[in-house]
Image (cartoon, rainbow, N blue to C red):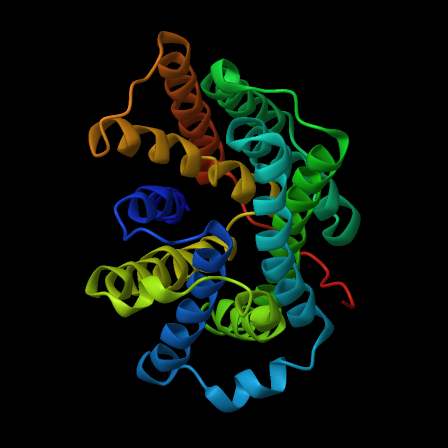
Length: 291
């Protein structure tokens, strides 16, 4: 799970090192599309079944993960546009573990534990310290869009957990989800400038984002979901903003305030606590819901 979060955290740095002319929305949609193609190629090579994947496309749980993956791109980037990167990220990423825990409780019967609540509170506090210096006054619509993005993260993780509990492969869940999401987002992609794809740097950016930050990262994510509940899974994904911040300083030469540095340290402390608690936890069979 932490490896998946770390790979997600490299996406922003990769985009910053890419060619001029990219847009967050265009990059986000292409990232999903390339990730879907990579996973489709990998399924038969790694013992999966494309035929089984076709059958899964019609299931309600697969459509939930697909809609969540696609809507997240629209909600998150629109939230960032209206509320700023710091506030949009804080609300979207910070509230996602809480929503995931509540949704998993309602759908899967996973009661929140005191340890998870504590680890999540530590991580969200660290995220708040990390973004505090850049927070602006986002409008109500922007904040609602950020909450919508958080809800998409929660819905994806819970619906993916449902599929994994039914024996769906770790490759098939993200492959089917991203394929459907890519098709749904094609009209939006048509409105984005894509001239940057004509350069070697643009091709390299699209391939890296698709292969590493979507293909490999989501395989690690779904494999981790087999042993962990949706709440802890989403909490551990807070490695994403912490890693992104560290890379911004080390690779891009960005400056980090003392408060932001403390925030990164607090996030890593929360991740260590959640990792220790999750590794000691014992998975028990749960009834699989009907979605």
